Image (cartoon, rainbow, N blue to C red):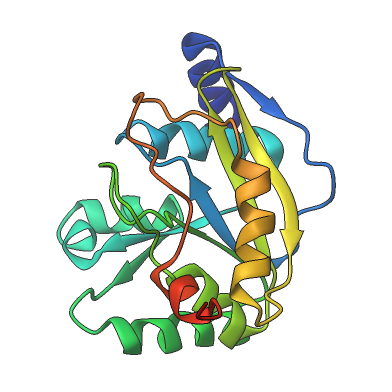
Length: 194
């Protein structure tokens, strides 16, 4: 039933899933970008479903309280406590060791509004868990979305981010003007002083 709903959702919105160029690893952190509106969420879930990619996603702990809790978990939700960000990275990295399969979808921008920097949590989780980073996307210009290449965090944050920037170059979010620069604050610290 959920596959039919996903296909219907994409049909109504006139979106197409792009066939992944390579299989999505069983364990990975996925960047969800551009992230410019709440509609990214159901669109990405539909794209994942029709692509046969089971994804898990991060959500505020409050989303999992009451009658919505079981629904959110069934949709792949993982409750997080935002008050302890350092502990959150370690906790999420540990999830990879206790699950047979985990494709953790992380909105790297951290907000639906335009921001000057991405959050580095996706990178730190992937490093700590020693799993690849998969570049998931939606692109309003082509009305397509899917899962791009998997990259391994090398420790050279600038070089890794250059590969990520190259992949997302030209892709547009659902809301024009909300997809900001693709950079981490940590990149400034990694660049040589001239």
